Image 1 (spheres, rainbow, N blue to C red):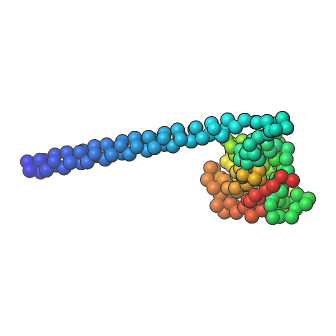
Image 2 (tube, helix red, strand yellow):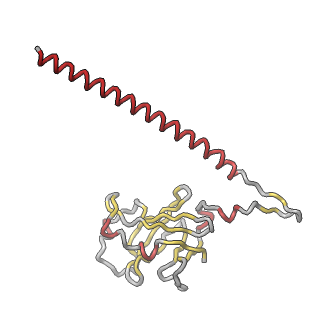
Length: 200
């Protein structure tokens, strides 16, 4: 009988502890949600003020903006498509390896290792950034050692974003296989592609 009573007491203690833990989690989730909502409401007015900047006429009657148009950090198809960008601090006048031909409507060739590894990639708008996706090895590619057919074509290999100077910043992510980063092949492209590019 003592054994059953002890077991019942132990069970009640466990249930009450679980209820307290559940209540604490609910309170924590509620506080987190309130904090996130407050942060969003603080950001929204700032965003709408920034979007509401209008042109003003100067004393000559010509339209001018407040100067923020050059600091636009949003990447859009209209802003970049059809342009060539060259990597800053690299001399590549012929665009053999350190250039990006940005065209949202067609595949482009990327150099991962000069005179050896070249791929075809496509661009896709992703919010304020542009994702780059592997398509296939290029005709110029001579490296057959990589598992080209295994690389994902729907996982971004890199992300392009604009900086405050109107340059493009490429963040190399690397190849993926089955949705996971292919660590053995992630370094390919990082040295040649990752960095800041300016409009040519």
